[in-house]
Length: 364
Image (spheres, rainbow, N blue to C red):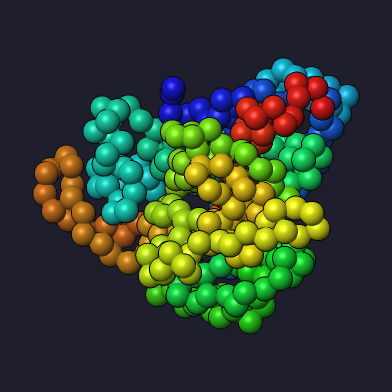
């Protein structure tokens, strides 16, 4: 399967480059009859668009979605849904100036070698975080499909930035407070400290990494196709398509390595006539299948690679060592804008598996 295609039944094809004419997505396999509008998709896109606050890039894009096919009179037709946004605020001149000096932490050098120099290098091209706008468009459709057909709700939020971790809060607080501040953290006290550290790092010409957590509520039992398409395997694969992701964990995650089996195992109980687990160290997945408990996963993001500090690199034309100070407009941390992207990716994978399991029909 080509590298720009995700899913088997809810199929997402990503296209576009950072400084090309547009970025977008084609969604194939969405059942006919789902009510969807550009306004609903725009509401999701607005959560990740650039230029909204001091903790994001100063690049200003309207990111106004256009649905080109697959939706008629407000409902999906069963045909492929093509959506795009146009790139307007583009300045590629800084990238031409550093064409032969690959930026540390970026894909510049490896892409140049792989594609023989024919890759679009402007703004990172195909390797830019801008392509995630397409993920959010597709995710908006997936989220509505999951919500209307299965009652599944997907919620992502910032768990950690620069070593500052939020306290545990209720689902109600996550739902109501996660977009109430610039860093998308439902713990207001932690959010203020995160913002302070981001502003400090930007002032020093540096950047910060962090963690986005995502939960999915009202999960059905049995989503997943072990062994190579188990639910956690497909989620991890898809989440690693987000630029800057360096780790994914479910439930207790790496913390499980410091637990005993008697601590990590989730004991069963009966609640309201349903089999549930008392704890959720498995994160809602057992043997690659959803177990009906909330899906819980966390995604680790590295510090943004484009920083103003001088760094060592090489001049590929002269084959000599040199230094570089990366020009352009960049995020001091990718974490806040990654929150809706993680949410979208999780929804896409869940929608695909729900269709594969026969829980959603070909007509809504």
